Length: 330
Image (spheres, rainbow, N blue to C red):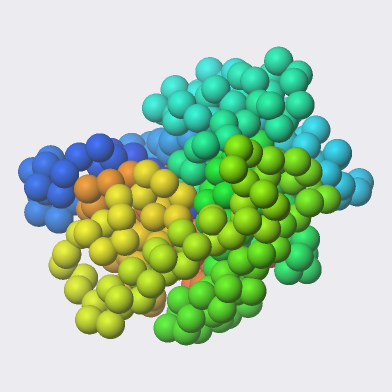
């Protein structure tokens, strides 16, 4: 089924589809792209945003690291290199988030990553790029630590870490053929099991903040916010409505836990209709490209490469890089 390729290409397709609708209201999207928003990625090449670019940065760093030895030091060095490479790329002109820009500038200066990160940010930049971690054949503990660590280099808020972990867990679940209907329940159980787990070997002293007494207290705050948004997701799925903006149920996606939940909601509204899921994700009032890229990642991980039209595959920007990573992990 080539699920890894399906995940990565789905992420890029969602990114391209949502790139032209981000920052717009649903009514404005319908006016610009009548009657129901963009139906396919535009242009040749169909351009993506920093969401796909940084996903490829994470993927490249993982490839470099796994070819030798996956350690905190080796992954930190590889991520620092690929993030700075992205920062200075002439193609880094797609309205990237300020958190990622500032943190990557700090990483470029050579200071320790604990000082480079933006400690209070839980923006969706933390988890819109985490998909490659969910594609790797890692044990659950290592996957969780790596997912949180890649987020922590730029977004130091505990919810950014937990939401990235949960996003990677969702992709790993779907990659193995997990039933979409039961996915929210499995994710909720996983979140509960991780609520007091702090990956100190990877995260070090990141937890040390004013009025925070222990690492477990720090990370539990992030998991509690994720559990709360999963409650909202479950409520929305009791009486699912494909015609209402998903952002009204699970948030506009500017922050990590809402991007995860709204991306999941769009996928779960159309679990066997990947194009409809992407179109719904792009027709949202929030951070449409990040919502849609996560929707595409979930749909592609579940349905594989056959989910996507060949015309889209041929036209998408970074096609060769996406294909190379997908082939490596399929």
